[in-house]
Image 1 (tube, rainbow, N blue to C red):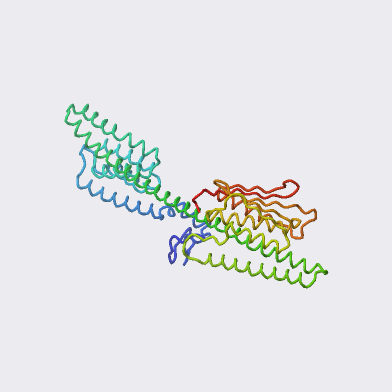
Image 2 (cartoon, helix red, strand yellow):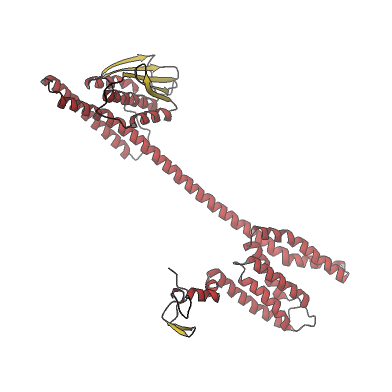
Length: 426
């Protein structure tokens, strides 16, 4: 939708009266589009903010120049005053297009000042010509600005040399060279300085925007990392307890030969897993609601693996536990990662294995390893996995700079994780 340019009560265009409409908003009148009509007469471009302002400045400069010429501020060479209006009009016209067409401004200025110097040098034309040079160096291309920079000094020297040849006076060399430098060099140098300052401002603004974009990228990365961490924790908490609940409840529903004591033990295990799962969920929710940024205290440690083994036994998995080396305090992140890897592995044994598993925890000089071996069931699992558990275990090990391997081994399935545990870092 076009914004209105001029709103008038009524005008005559091409013999047709347009009443109460905005010219730029009319679709057609007088046999052509309104905007085409305005563009044909240059009204659209003229009404734009920059060109309108420059046109007003150009008109004011032309009127002031006429007053100066009438006042006699020019070198008299026998020409009538009206011939000086032409050069003045050229340089003033260059002011009108100084922002939109800096190359045209320079061309008009050079032609105007050339004619003025040949006819009768006038103060008004020279002053307006300095603005032509300033605008060309400021608003023109980099090439044009650089060319004016290097051409301004030789130009002043050439003017002085020509004057020396014509007048045969050495004093004129210095005087005219300084005058030419004042007219030619000062506007160009000023424009180049202002241009460099503006470009520096633009660079600083772009750099600030780049910093904002990088900060936003860092924030998104941090959010993604936090979401991934939350997903791992939720999976480990839910998968272990609720997988045991699902398998045990399925066994009770499908086995009709279980006596009351066995059913009671299974139901007690289901209740224990439910309570434990809810407790861990409450702990996680409490941590998420904390507003401070204190380091999370690890609730589960690798030393508590025996509890996991006991719980898996209650769920129906025959699990053995061996500890090699001297147990020692571990960094909180390593403690939690080792515990969660054993927990997820035993959950997979419960879901996909034959009901037997072996856990080995080894304390070495600068690392700790956990290994979980289990035979593979020849029958398909009733609870097909999504692979999220293996992804979570790999992420936990990778975040600590460790290594996790999971795959077939000696007719069964092995999960082995090596986690860094430098002495004295607990």
